[in-house]
Amino acid sequence: MKAFTLRRVLGALGAFGKSGAAGAAGTSANVCGKFSALAVACMLALGHPTAHAADADAGNFPNRGPIRLLVGFAAGGSSDTVARIMAPVLSKTLKQNIIIDNRPGAGGNIASDALIKAAPDGYTIMLGTIGSLAVNQHLSKLSYDPVTDMAPISLAVSFSNVLVVNANSKIHTFAEYLQAAKAPHSDMSFGSSGIGSSGHLAGEQLKFVAGLQNQHVAYRGGAPATNDLLGGTLASIFASPTDAIQFINAGKLRPIVTTGLQRLDVLPNVPTIAESGYPGFEANNWYAFTAPAHTPAPVIEALNQAIVATLKDPEVDAKLKKLGLDPAPTTPREADRYIRAESDKWGALIKKLNINL
Image 1 (cartoon, rainbow, N blue to C red):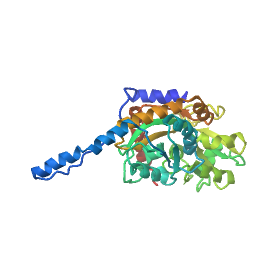
Image 2 (image 1 turned 90 degrees about the vertical axis):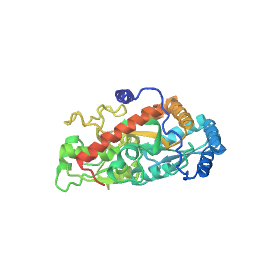
Image 3 (image 1 turned 90 degrees about the horizontal axis):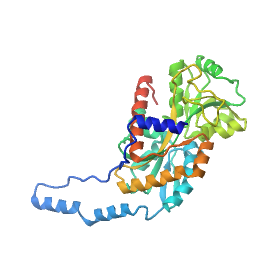
Image 4 (image 1 turned 120 degrees about the vertical axis):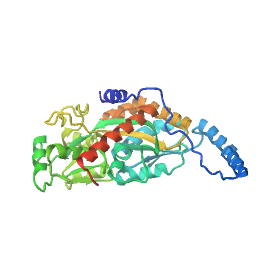
């Protein structure tokens, strides 16, 4: 159901056209001098055989390995889980080893920085989150712009978050949560997988519309936040279903509400915030695969085909849906349109709510 909703949103954005070549390759440096001899030398240099060899190599991608997959959060978290579910099938499809490289910290910015500094050859890619791709640039000044300095490959998954508390908490309903969070100097803190994450934004959005007084606690991924919630040192989390579902099923966490317009299929008895007194409330999450800007179009296309095939693999599809995640394969152009639209949307909200680090 939610995968259909995502496709409808993409369609409304005019995204369902022909597949584009995200991240067109190459820029030419202006190194020519004033003298004609230098100009001739410059033109010869710009057309030297190495460039043609690189183009040929791109057409044969991938002809070596391994491929490094950057993840901006700690092992065991939601984005890491998605990467590890997909990696074996993606490796088989590309016929190359996939090495997952966790670079937690700064809401995914550390991994993003590593990506844009990598060679644009397709052998370093990233599974980015809504935070690292569409939000963080609006929260602080970065040395890069994820919208223009990365080449989208495909969306990966989409899903809503779930507000959970410890099973021993006195909070059983959304009304009780709101009452506790409205108290002066409220101790009903809410954690998230990091600054700029959808969980962070969902909590800040709820604070604004409901007049709450609780404070955000940022972690380096969903797993560390969940550990503190289980240990009783954190009051609540806007968690991904991936991080929360096993503990909900085990009776260790209690779900209160979800953040999408529709209930999660894996938690059909848990109401949404939208149906609990705040119509229209929506804070969805998504992940997407990106490469460094200027990665050759044939490489982007090869990666896209492999990622789309992986997301459509029956075993991968079943594993993701079991965790409350909807596979969301797209073309590079569709992914680019969606990321740009999300950046505009959340940038406007951050400015409106005056959200600061």
